[in-house]
Structures are given as C-alpha cells and as structure tokens.
Length: 473
Ligand code: GLU
Ligand code: ZN
Image (cartoon, protein in one colour):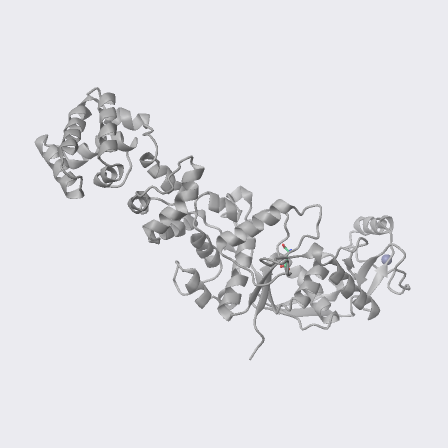
C-alpha cells in the first residue's frame, strides 16, 4: 500500500484568488478527497512588500466559497490553519543551518554592489549572469552580514518526471548556487516551498506550469535535505480567447468577481475543472462526481482557453437544476445587495421557480424578479409600445375579471384571458403583453398567469389600475 496522498495549495497573498490559482487549488483538493488523503493550505507570504492582509482574506474567502476546505494547520486553539510562511522562519533557519553544516550550503558575504557590478558586466557581454561561487570556500562567520546560498552539486543535467508533461530535463549549466535565505532570515521561494513540502510531508506537488523552471532546483533541494522527491503535476496555464495568458483584459479573473456576478460555486468549480480535465463527454458534474472521477491522468498537457460564454452556460444549467427553495436561499444576499429586503417572503421559492429557466445568474434572477418586491419601474419603450389607448379596454376587462373572480388560480386566469381575447378576436399574446407591461414594467417575464399569482389579487389590481391610467383609460 502506498502512503496516503498529501497535497497542498500554496498561494502568495499578493492579490485576489485568480481563476488559475483556484483551479490548482481545486485539482489538489479533488485528488485529496478522491484518495482519502490530506489537502494543506499554505500562504506563501515571504514577499512582505507585496503580501497583504486583504489578499489573504480574499484567498480564504474564495476557497471557502468554492467549498475547498483544508485539513491541517498550526494549532491556534480554534479552527486551524492555514499555515503562514512568515510564522515559520525558525524552521527555515534550522534547515538552512543543517545544509550549511553538511557542506550543502554556505554563507555568501558578497555585497549588493559587487554583485550588481558583475551582473552589469555580464549584460554588457551578452551572457547570463551566474554567481561564480566567490564565497564557496570561505569559513562560516555568522557575525558578518550574509545570505545563504545552496551549493549546487556537480551535474550535467537534471531530469524529473511530470504527471502532466512527462519527462522534463534541465541542463546543469543553467543552474547556479542560488540564494536560499536572505540576510534578514527570510527564505526565498524555492527554499521556503521545499522546506515546507518536506516538513508537511507533501508527496505530490500540483501547481501552475509557470513553476516548471523552479522544479529542477527544488528537486536538488529535496535531495540535499534527504527527503524523497515528490511527484509533480504542472498544470498548463489558462489562456484568453487570443491565446495569451488569461488576464484582466479578458474579463474578470478573480473567483470572488464571479461570486459577485451571481455565479454559483458549483458552476465555477464545474467549469474550472473542465478546463483541461475530461471524463468522457460529460460536461456537468456535481462535487461528488468530481471527487469520484478525478485523476491527474486525464489532465491535458496543453493550455486551455477560458470561454466566458461556456461558463455562463454551465452556470445557467446549475441555476435550472437547483431546487427552487435552495435557489431562493442562494439569491438572498443578491436581493439584499440590490436593496431589496425579501427575507422571509413566502413567495420566494415560487418566484425562483418561475424564473429559474430564464435567469443565467443569481444577479439576473434578482433583476428579473425585482418587480415582485419593489414598485414597478416602467420601461418607457415598453410603455410606448404596449400601453397606448388601445390597451385600455383590454386592461379594463382583465382588471374586472380578476376583481370578480372568487379565487385566483391558473385555470380561472386562463379562461379569463381566452374570453377577453375571443371577445375582441385577438391573439392571446395581444392581451397578455399590455397586462405584462402594466404588471412588471417590461416585456419579458414568465407566463402571465404565474406573474398574476405571484403578485396576488390586490397588487395585480393596483398595477392594472396604474397601467390603465398610463393608457389613458
Ligand atoms: N507561492 C507560489 C505561487 O503562488 C506557489 C508555488 C508552488 O505551488 O510551489 O505561485
Ligand atoms: Zn559571495
């Protein structure tokens, strides 16, 4: 039996949770859940100039909204984790010292000025600057200001296997004795990540393929620390329609922006996982199905193109499939954001049911169904077209019919509309449309009987009266 899977997501909190980061988090999470392993969240906040509390919050918000929970973290006497690298500086120091003692790393005392001058020279000579190992054999003097550099083992090339990309080889000549800990004791990315992967016992590293070039050095660092090299899965970047890396130019790229636009987390998860992973022709997956079927063997090696229309389609499919009461519950914050206090309104599930075939997002649902919870906002174009003087007798007849009906129900309304249409030799649509405009302020709505039933008798009559006035009736 092989060891339980331990994977991680290690974002740098320098911005919101990007679509690409969220996909990496999701695939790791799915693999952990699929295998019964552990998923660890580690905030790589060592770039103190660019890391912010807001970004940490945005990342955690995004993770929670997507339903990606993490399994471990420091014991903080409450809900644990995530890990923060800046709380683990002692550990990096300890591991760096171990390497120094073993001769696998050394203190470098070179000044910034010296190194800059060498870099300039290399530039002038059009060659890549590689640290020449000036301090390799100097005695360790912790009292002098120094950085720690990794002592690169002699090697021609380094090859590692990637679950997505296959074998990847890097020539040794492109590697150097790189800095692993800065003078202030803060580790550089490659070292911090490896020490964490070692101490967190990570055995599969799945991340964006922008890190492929870091992997060779990381492999050497795992080896130097005497730790089995984990498996790697480098995920192709997500591209925009123009085949350049997905960025703001292509539209919203943060997970929370999609939440704010009224996407369901199920749909975002569903869409993200399908970017580069497939299971036959299936397009719509529940989280449970994803956990059941996911594996890195079906992650494609080529970059996928982000398609906003398809994402909307996936969302719409999810909106249609939620039970109406659940859909209504999910829509509550969006009603609130639109200034509508609807909580506790018993009509909510029926409204959701009437609109779920038409709404692409929760924001859509709210704006389309606004008229049940707020006064009519008349669309001037609809008014001009449908509430002219010839609408008055129709509105009057429907109004009187509703006022006279004993109980309001779909069958009674259907008969009323048919009678009014037949008496005037009109198509049903010619009767329904002015009524619709009077009741909702616009020309698009679910079936007119549903609209009347949702509004109720009193409100329907009041709106028909107002419509009659506009029509000069
Ligand atoms: N902090 C790195 C990033 O956000 C993570 C790299 C990794 O997963 O090793 O790109
Ligand atoms: Zn040096």
